[in-house]
Image 1 (cartoon, rainbow, N blue to C red):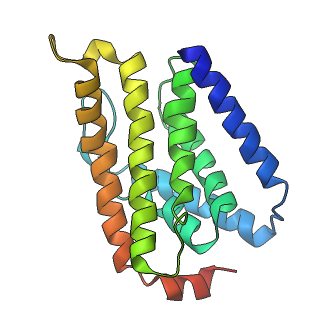
Image 2 (image 1 turned 90 degrees about the vertical axis):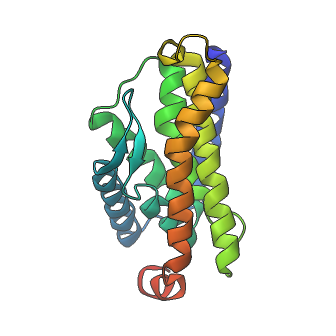
Image 3 (image 1 turned 180 degrees about the vertical axis):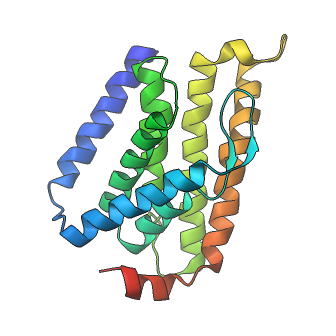
Length: 196
C-alpha cells in the first residue's frame, strides 16, 4: 500500500509541477506565498486543543492557504500549502516513511489550496470549496493514521474508526470552523487589496 501511495503522490506532484509551468511568479506573488505560508505555520504553533499523539485543533492554520486559493487561485495556493507542509516538518513533525510524508505533510496541506474549486463569486461556493478541501485533508490524515499509527488505537477498537474519529475531530473540526470564518471575511475587499 505504501508503494502505491508513493507512486500516486509523486504522480500528483508531477502534475502540480507541470501545471506550475504556466504560472508567471512575480516578486509580489512570491512574497505573498511566503508570507501566507509563514502566517500558516505561526497559527499552527498556537494549539487550541492538542492531542496526545500529535495533531489537534490549531488557531486557523488552514486559513491563509484557503484564503490564497480564493484570492489568487490554485497554483499559488498549492505552492503555499506545499511550503506550509515543509515548515510543519521543520517545526518538529516526524516522518515515518515516504508515504506518510506525502499523506501528512505534502498532499494534505496542498489540497487546502484548492479552496476556490467551486468558484469565488458567491459565499456559499467559497464555503463549499473550503469544507470539501478541509475534509479531503482530514481524509488523507485518516489514511495515514490507519497505515502508520495503528499502534495508538485503544485495544479492541477498529483502526478505521479510531483514525476517522481522531482526524475528523481535529483536522475536520478545524476545517469546519475555518470554512465558517471564511464566510465572515470581506472576500471582495481582500481580492481588491491583495489580489491581482
